[in-house]
Length: 366
Image (cartoon, rainbow, N blue to C red; front, side, top):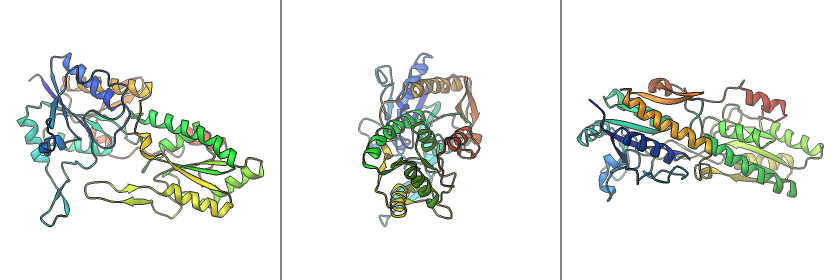
């Protein structure tokens, strides 16, 4: 049977380029004579349609996606609390609990006449997509995460924009750090993989970069600061991924809620306070946080997003299911979702960027 009705879902944290993917999917589908629909806020549009007066499953046409390629966010909305296999619902006692609503979701997709689903998201979204494919849904995944930690693709869209913005922020901090002779600690996103901190830190000439893959000794970071002081450089820039941890220590967790992953945060302040105490130098912390998710996508992210969206529709047209589109320069290819979700793509300790950073004298606190 020729696929005629496509549904799009965007889950997890937003990332620059999401709207470009949506536009690409819609136009590529319409050019095949297909219908295209968007599910509001992940899968919530189908599981809690009463929350959406305009409808939880909305038709998407050319007018819907006109002029959105350069816009951040997602016109469909998103959530990181809508896993249909562990869906948060209030119990009789008022406490939230998690239930499996995946069969209900599959049945609703069939009732709505959806022939295929394109799931745009990070590792959690791809795991959900894989599980839905095992339940008989034709699914194609599109890798989205600013953290760049999805396996089997060279890069995910949103990452380049996050790194570019972080680099610009550090460039600005150099002047104020030097003017006040301060230590500036910059905390960025990166729960379990330090790609953003590493790439932006090297590009913006940070003096130390602390990432989840390399547990740090704060005294070695302090020594890097003091060595700069002895050489006449009386300020330092320290990059910290939110998932960085000291040797023998734990992640800095800000909170945990039902239906959500643990929320990290606060390691930048810990590093800032420790360095101030050890070195006696004034220190400040800047947490970029969700600033990395917003704003206009770079031209690179726009192009990758448009390529990914078109490739996802081609995959459906070819009868593919249970696959994720992935960048394998110079082409976009399909990889099984099972492989893409088998492990997280962390920074290899022998990668060229880390070797370059060490050659430049950047400290990793090890």
